[in-house]
Image 1: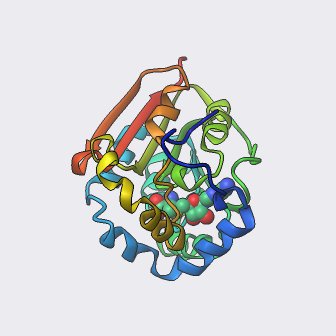
Image 2 (image 1 turned 90 degrees about the vertical axis):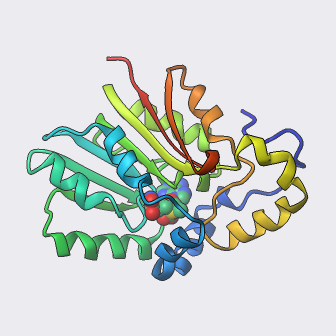
Length: 226
Ligand SMILES: C[S@@+](CC[C@H](N)C(=O)[O-])C[C@H]1O[C@@H](n2cnc3c(N)ncnc32)[C@H](O)[C@@H]1O
């Protein structure tokens, strides 16, 4: 499936190499939250993603590319002792931060796994699956979405929080795209060539989208027919 803008030349995608991705995030794990400030991530974005997960006590939740897991404690509290949260990520250092955070919150229902989410099968099905700023760091985002969709229970919610080049600004930024690519690949790895909302539509279900910062950020929810 072609998930890049057709106007762009094809290029090697470092996101296809799990070892490279793990090394990239191991390197920035200590300062990762600073990038959120630098990239003007809206303060309400994570809360909005959490709301769209529509969690209930007892739910099983999967966070794909959970990183330092900023939402995991809140998710763990909502699903409670009867529920379960699984966070998967390639980067051990990102997971170390998540682990320390979970310990501070004293939550026993969160499991963290260092693994490639593309091959993770786990104990599906899940009632909710979250991609928070992770989908655009995948080299095969369409495959990842379809794999996640298979792990989702009927009636389950898939929520994607991410950034993108707003469609209205694509022509404008085209001359500086190589610089944007370089910067992102040197930091948080978001793929400026990806059109995540187009990929989500390929799941064949209505996509409920809330845009922020003029379309530079969005929270999208897709519900699996039950
Ligand atoms: C930009 S960070 C976002 C972290 C976190 N979800 C957040 O909202 O702060 C993207 C994360 O996705 C992880 N990731 C990328 N590709 C992955 C893969 N194939 N399997 C598992 N994790 C992956 C990276 O290691 C990184 O921690």
